[in-house]
Amino acid sequence: MTSARVALVTGAAQGIGKAIALRLNSDGFAIALSDLPAKREALEDVAKLINSGGGRAAVFTGDVSVEEDVKNMVDGAAEVLGGFHVIVANAGISIPRSLLEETSEGFDLQMAVNARSVFLAFKHAARQILAQGHHEGRLIAACSICGKHGYTNTAAYSASKFAIRGITQSAAHELGPHGITVNAYAPGGIDTEMSESRSQIISLSHTNTFLARMANSVPVKRIGQPEDIANLVSYLASKEASYMTGQTVSIVQLYVVRFLIL
Image 1: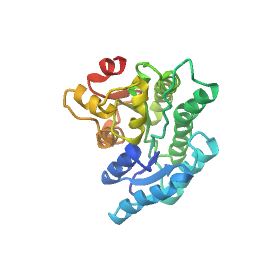
Image 2 (image 1 turned 90 degrees about the horizontal axis):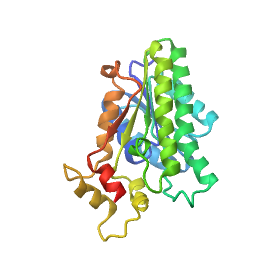
Image 3 (image 1 turned 60 degrees about the vertical axis):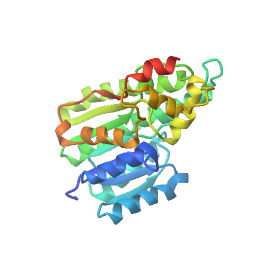
Image 4 (image 1 turned 120 degrees about the vertical axis):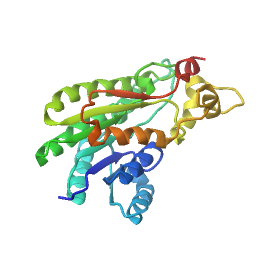
């Protein structure tokens, strides 16, 4: 078994997932990179970046809402990289839509990709960690500020993110005695491709862009970057975070309630 700790990051082809993978690599982890098959080329680029810098990375593709795919990702990471210690269930989708216009299919899709994926990731990661016998691990999930407050046009998305908090707390109780901590991070507005579509959430019709308006609304006068989230995940994945579990940590500034209800 490798001496380096191994972390699997889902949704790692771009944005926050990519930033998390690169940060954990710099922290000394061997990285299993996961995303949809259509994003394999982007995943390979991230892997090359890590491997060329002296790190170790392997690529796995699949659908995080499908149990067999998630199990294969976890098993593959352990086999190829020589162990398993951390999972970051980062993959997710957001489909801003009015409650009056939301469909059952749209609701189910967001629940599957955002919430069921976390359940599956935690289940199979915990099984692998316990099977290894070292009983030390970190399970980390992507929640959202919409998992703490409901906003306009986010009923399905918010429901899926609220569910993640429940999964996180329940898993923390169950797995704590085995030395496995379970936490989530809850970003507000972050400068990613997904954020561009979120302007629809509050139906902006102003000339300023969604991100520019958010940046002007926060105390530090800048929009959050993927690296800001990666810095938090770095701590949650570390051995220093061994006493922290069952938490969903907001990484958002004071603008959020005022901004999103305007």
